[in-house]
Image (cartoon, rainbow, N blue to C red; front, side, top):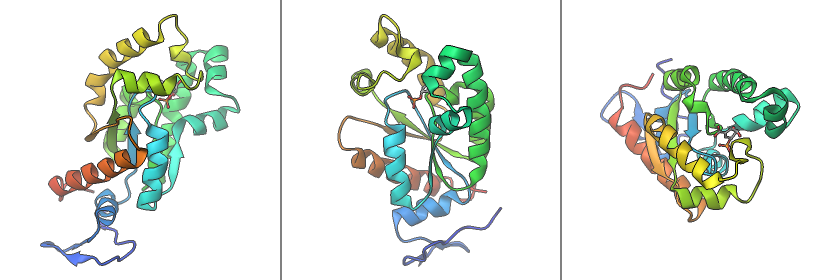
Length: 211
Ligand code: S3P
């Protein structure tokens, strides 16, 4: 467990300790991560999948999307799972799939908006991953989710009111994430950049705590 990885040897410089300190931010993030996954959390429309895919490419790590994996495991879409079996059934599947994905090592994992609200999943993420909350304001979220009608929880007479209620309920829990990054409506690359910088700073202050 204790081994620090020096995957690419891209100009690693000597740090103060026994481990070589990577010279690039991406290298330091991979080093700080070790074998843990980066777990993206946040509300629907926060950009977890889009940012996650780009972040993974940037860090040279595999990308996994929990919602996609749930759909593949069930052989049906999330709206169909909700409609045919209900939300509780979806949450059971979500818990199992994320538990499996958390064992894949250093990956970037985008989770569905409700995943971190589940106590078991939250504990598992805390235990084996590094969580990043992509925090967005109501306007940004609504602008993004309006593009697709694939969110069963927003099929209500007042989707904006529903989203506001979800923000009230979930944001205090999302705030338990290791790292918080504002996800604004600008270029996704800027959010990716902010995530890399925030993770680098996180590992800098928690150096020595990493497994
Ligand atoms: C949900 C978010 C969705 C999906 C499901 C439930 C939620 O994922 O998991 O519709 O509870 O917030 P995204 O956050 O990727 O849209």
